[in-house]
Image 1 (cartoon, rainbow, N blue to C red):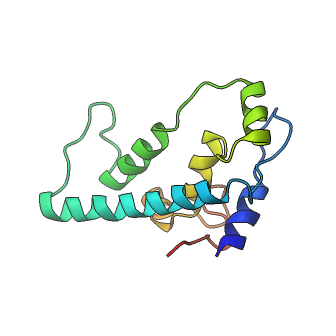
Image 2: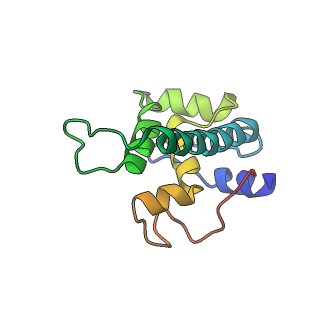
Length: 134
């Protein structure tokens, strides 16, 4: 299980930034991010079963509930960071950069691929096996 995550995250680079994510260094946080997304999605589905579908937000009427869940998930990681900030993070931090935290978890989510109808072998639904925790 952990080898899948290490290999996946080892391959992430960010355009214009020297270095790459170190999958072994960020492993604990990557597992937490992936497990957290899975648990949050399960909890959201349980909430919807009890309470029904949610109302549409103005400006987001074309998105369904599942798509909005993933849009909200991605938005929590929005940040403004300099190239130097990201390079320092790659060198010293046990967290992957926020961009990678979003891409990595969503690439592992079959629910995301289904919600957005991502064809197989595309950036957000790669052909490689999806890394799973449970």
